[in-house]
Length: 351
Length: 286
Ligand SMILES: Nc1ncnc2c1ncn2[C@@H]1O[C@H](COP(=O)(O)OP(=O)(O)OP(=O)(O)O)[C@@H](O)[C@H]1O
Ligand SMILES: [Mg+2]
Image 1 (cartoon, rainbow over the protein chains, first blue to last red):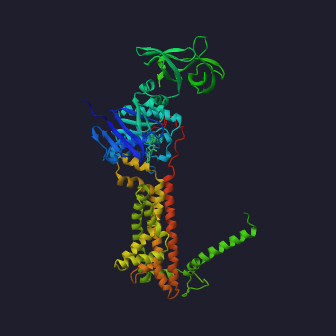
Image 2: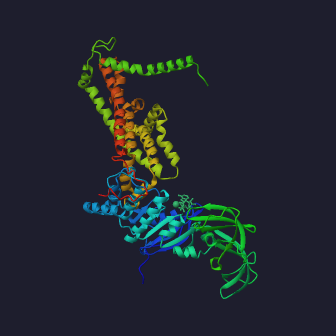
Image 3: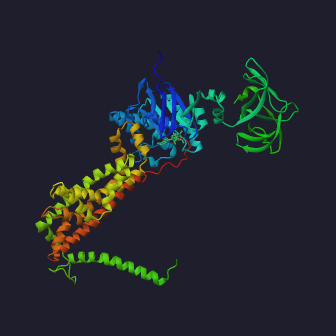
């Protein structure tokens, strides 16, 4: 038999009055795994995390840590490290005292506290700020100290609630890499709440997409990006075009679908000929090519959004507007340029 | 609305007069207390502290001072412990009937002391209890607890809940969290509440008159009863001392609190000026 999961949520719900903040959630997190809870505002991410920490009680369902039901274990006995959005450092304690806080309650002898705090400061690369108060640290340093405070207790479970969202973009990228490195080197089971899909994709071993208190999909970042199980999940990871089409023939897991202007493509799936479909295509999978006269969807550029590395175009085509994201290696097409749209059948997803 | 120069002068003059009316008698008492002649009267002919020295030789005064201090310290201590507990419950726990409890506990600050005095006395009569130091103490606690509750509550509301939550995730239980996080952060407000409670107990006359056992004098009550005989120089000195104490204690407290909190807030060293996105270690890692 395999070892019990680090954390399991079994059919956990949390109601606030008539609102179900978390609704019948099942979640299993393996030892050492880094899981991102991803979802838009109000979808129940924080509530889920707080229930794991013990700061919130489930209305129903069980929370199981290493095979032991912990619903009734109070927060202070759970051995979780938590990093809050706004660092939550104790303003009247120095960085050293903040980090040592949890060790005091674990009856760690003084010399060992000093040693472990020093090591935690090294891990977050701030060995020189031990004597400073939080108000004497920059935002990024504060958040690192908060991380050090959470990891120094060697928690069974490390919880992050949008720890980077209060930081500016450059710092966010740097800390993102750093957190990932720390998590991997210490091997702490980690749950990371975010509403930023980039963060989830780049950091997590596994992503759980939530919506309305429920789990919509879970899988590796690649799985979720490549094979979203719904339009909702697909739209969460970027801009999506929707194209109408009609099945003309089908068989063997592939069907021929006719789009507008005489374009016909093989698309994975099975539906009876004559069925009308709505197909989804990511903006970054739609390519703008010069019009060479072969059958193609045609249109003209109506909007340009220059992003540096990328350019996002709006293209009017028939009665619709499609979005296409292109690498900015070529010259930017001006508004009004006639273009043909190139797409591949295997990139199309049935909605 | 625009005021003419004349109305402004009149308004200013009137305001000054009102303040003079209220404060001048205090200065008169203080000035006379240092005047050598036996009978407190003008003109001021010299300077002496002998009337103050005489106070210490008067056993009645010494007893009254001891009583007042004992009462005020006990009152402030009890009011602070209960008041802080009540404030914490009122801020952190959304229990049923919270608004009613809040009103009930802070009401004594709004009700005239005469009414509180008579009311509590009647209540104890009905219960068959006689006047005692304990009764007086209970009354003073009820009168002064609102100061502690209000100052502490105000401060607690400004302490973010997530600090206490962080403390609990780190392994501190409810009490340890209160002691290690909440209490130190609320300390200046609690000290202020304590001093408020102490001073208002020390100065209280109206309700105390109803509650005190026979021949049981606090300083203000001693002054009041002596006034019925005559205005002596000794009484002037005592009154002046009272004024000094009543002004001095709060002012001193505020000064000390200011020193304490500003020392805690002032950076010992300036925070790093390097752009935040640079790796924070380079250069000054020791
Ligand atoms: N203490 C509370 N009382 C009442 N409703 C609450 C409470 N906490 C959360 N909710 C509700 O539960 C739902 C989920 O809230 P939660 O904080 O878990 O969302 P979230 O996914 O963390 O959102 P965000 O990204 O904005 O932080 C929301 O509809 C919220 O209004
Ligand atoms: Mg949240």
